[in-house]
Amino acid sequence: MAHYNVTYSCGHSDRVQLFGSYEDRQRRIEWFQQEAVCPACYKAAKEKEAAGLFGDLPPLSGSPKQVAWAEKLRRDAMTDVQKDIQEAKSDEFRDYLIAIAKRMIAERTEAKWWIDNKVNGQNARCRFEEETKISA
Image 1: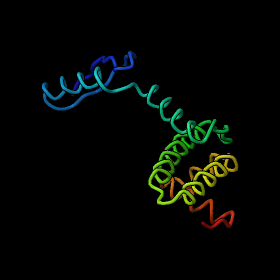
Image 2: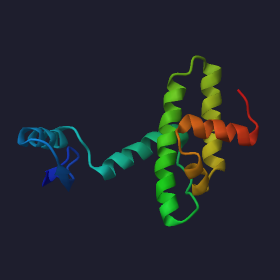
Image 3: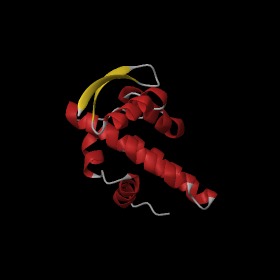
Image 4: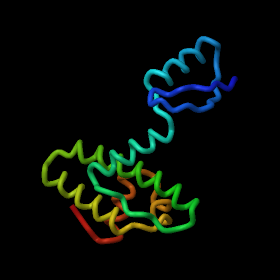
């Protein structure tokens, strides 16, 4: 195990801890430089991806720690919902999923709700449907 200063493909630098043989660590460093983006750019890309389909995500309420955790959970849930939308068998079901996701984002602005329903996007969507008595 060793610490290395690496430059990601996005141009940002960071100190990372790598494990394994010398050759494995060198391969990993090359991967960081050629393909990987830094955590900040990764987070920004995920937010942009979610915003692409669902627009700007409203701010969440709660403690700073709750909000930080819930924002990640909400991004992950929206990524799961996007996959469901892409795999939808009919346009009607696809439109339904988009409508539910947009409504869920607009109505669930408490960090606590996203933390309590954190398993995945489908779980959050199903819980939201139960709470609001919506059916496909």
